[in-house]
Amino acid sequence: MKVGVLALQGDFREHIASITSLGVDAIPVKTAQEISAIDALVIPGGESTTISKLAKAFDLFDLIKARIADGLPTYGSCAGMIMVAREIQDPASGQETFGGIDMVVKRNAFGRQVESFESDIEISGIAGPAFRAVFIRAPWVESYGPGVEILATTLTDGKSHAVAVRQGKVFATSFHPELTHDHRIHRYFLESVVGAQL
Ligand code: GLN
Image (cartoon, rainbow, N blue to C red; front, side, top):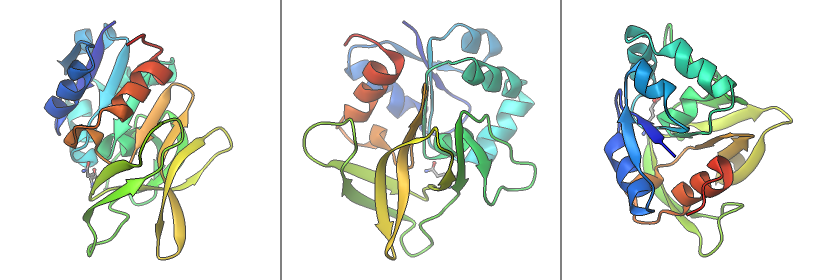
């Protein structure tokens, strides 16, 4: 099985390290040939406007969009979550997404004061103690369709927002599990979404 981590921009190296530490090979991908050959895709955190622009500039945008629509198991973290949303509530001009999950996301949703923070959260499907989630200028899910499974939420100003979601073969988190030594999110993706035997 070949897991590809989109290596246009962002912290793809950390995702490769997390997946490799689970005994699964992961490679950086940034050409059409590489993207055509993978069995699963991770879209890392970084800057979604840049990932969107570079995917278009390198002629990869339509290919990635089509592969996700065709059922390629995909995990998007932070900017990656934005990239798999159907719609961005407040897109930068010309900013588009690959789609995959029937949701509207809000970028930089947690506001300036708390742009980056850590929080222990319960995630459905992840056994054991609460997960230490690292949020860095993170998005949240503003609204979603009936096919979307909500796996985790956070409470901000008394309002609950989804920060881990799944629709079929596409999984997304607002936070960055690759920045901690807890690999349960990557294990969940590989075992439950991709269907790998670890
Ligand atoms: N705010 C960034 C964006 O809009 C995401 C930040 C991140 O990936 N850590 O793409």
